[in-house]
Structure formats: C-alpha cells, structure tokens
Image (cartoon, rainbow, N blue to C red; front, side, top):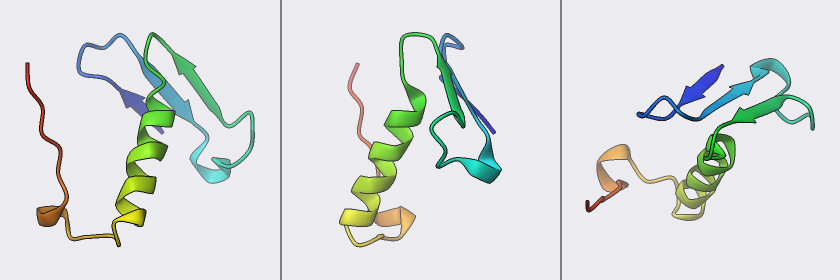
Length: 61
C-alpha cells in the first residue's frame, strides 16, 4: 500500500500483509505519513469509533 500527501512530496510504502513488522513501513519526504495515519486511527478508536459523519477534520489556511 502507498500513502501520498497532496503535494506529492511525502510517501509511506507499507507491506500491508505484515504492517506490524519493524521493517514493513518505509517513509520518504518531510512528513511521516504512516505515523499520521496511526495517530488518526488511534484517535478514532479512542473516540469510540464514531460513524464517519460524526468524526472529521477541520483545516484553516
């Protein structure tokens, strides 16, 4: 699996079948997209796994 940021400057490449292994994730660029994904997933789980209509992100420019 590959995760890319919108700018195309950061990527995380994940061995999806064995994502828990220490060498299963490789990240490139300024952002650690895998850590961001894990943090977001953890926050969603801690919030009780709300429906996607009840759990969102707000951004300001």
